[in-house]
Length: 237
Image (tube, rainbow, N blue to C red; front, side, top):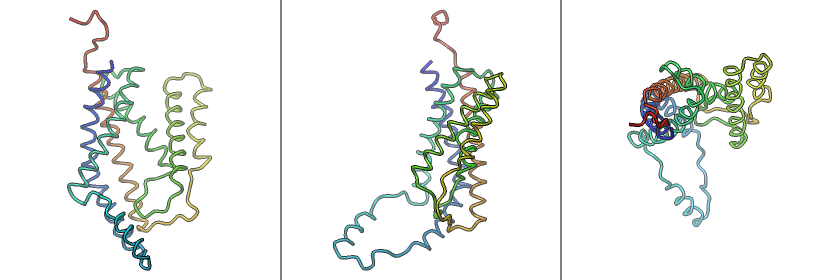
């Protein structure tokens, strides 16, 4: 079973990561590059009156490597996408042991559940932001994001697997609770990029992630379904 989960995750994750990187290169990256133009234009020139020793230290720190625009940035993006895609595919493949998909459509439905849990529900309070956007403390946002994803996953499980009205009502409360509390927000919400660019980026991010999750779920469900089960000794030749 472990081999089945691992091979499913690697197969589905690799293909989904390739698709995600392609969509990001065509749609997301150009928007980020436009936002970086506004960000770089507003970057203040600091350390002008620093002492010579301090300026030498800052010059050394500024030499930290970062991928350049072009193939380096695309390759770095793919590497990150691959890790994330395989990780999420491992989660889906493990969940297939609860209710194994019998068609690729079932895997796509699991993918939709993953999209709601890890993207749509958190984005309702913390939408994707372009570079140059003021944000609340990172640890607070991470805590809220994790709590929201956990609440959404639990709520979806109750809605799908429970038949009692009480638990379905509890699921609705769980979905709403993080948003009633409210996501952490900065004291002064300010973005360097225009509102139109922000809106395009948010819509593009949501749509790209939707395609990614549906494809990841469909591929992982199909591969998990197609692989023979050898855990039963009677099935081993």
